[in-house]
Length: 367
Ligand SMILES: Nc1ncnc2c1ncn2[C@@H]1O[C@H](COP(=O)(O)OP(=O)(O)OP(=O)(O)O)[C@@H](O)[C@H]1O
Ligand SMILES: [Mg+2]
Image 1: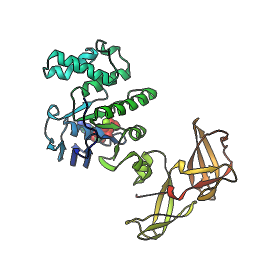
Image 2: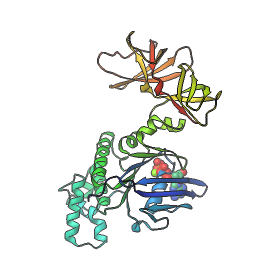
Image 3: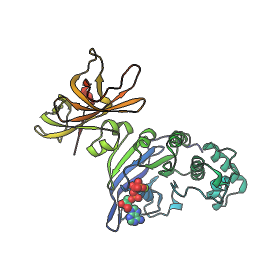
Image 4: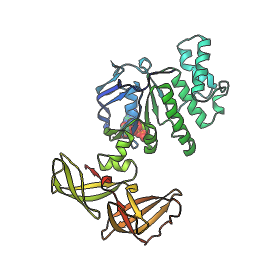
């Protein structure tokens, strides 16, 4: 089942796709390309159009406008069984009345392949998902995680160019889901097939994907690597969907070809990268992540910039504590996260503290 690893070849090319269900616009002009061998995720809140977009790629639905190219061919109106794709559904994952081997071999049996070949490929597929020796097991006698693996094996055995996965892990409990996330990523690297994963879980998307398309209201809000999305979110909405972000008002003192000079409320003056769209005098919002603010426990602790704050509340998570802090002499509250390394006390509400932040940690946000 080995296939070439990531290349620069485009495997999926979606051009200006629109989809209307009565009054509801499920997809509102979506264009994107996915590269061969990529682990690509569609991430967004419920109802933003993720499943609809996946159905356009699989052929279970077709767009009102626009086109879908797969591996260089126009597939916009081609039925699912004639596309080089396969889909793993969340809900009706496997047939309960068939055993594991019959489930996995189902597609090949329909293609009327010789029994010996089916048997061999079923074993190969079961090995891929760590289920060797489970062929005779009845499907109903499997755990949730095992069922999910059978569903994966059943899709992989067809050797699709693209595997489409619609929230494949959402039915599993947290621990098992985390294990399966790691396994799915490993599996994707082994087989080298392009994976397109739909999820509303930002952590899942961040840890698993090469690239992520964040969707809101039937549109792609930002398409980037996990690190790009986290470090350089373009809008407030993307910033608050991916992790925790503090939003702080700022005034633009000067906008030149090389930099933006800002006066950030409570934090003070800072220069950031230039912008074509932001003008001098404008009021904007900047973002700063909780881990970019640091409580300076010791008097000798220092940072680029230091200000005072009062702890409003503390939420203890074992490895981390999240503090809500009122920034010196303003009504602005920010979240500060601190790792609970040896000897660090959890600070109580009301404690006055110094907080440091680095100049490079500010993100300028549009809208
Ligand atoms: N067959 C349909 N008929 C009518 N409206 C539909 C249909 N399918 C989807 N929609 C609507 O289109 C929008 C997008 O739905 P979609 O299923 O793509 O969302 P999603 O991002 O997958 O959400 P979730 O995370 O809840 O699965 C929603 O408003 C939904 O109600
Ligand atoms: Mg969905």
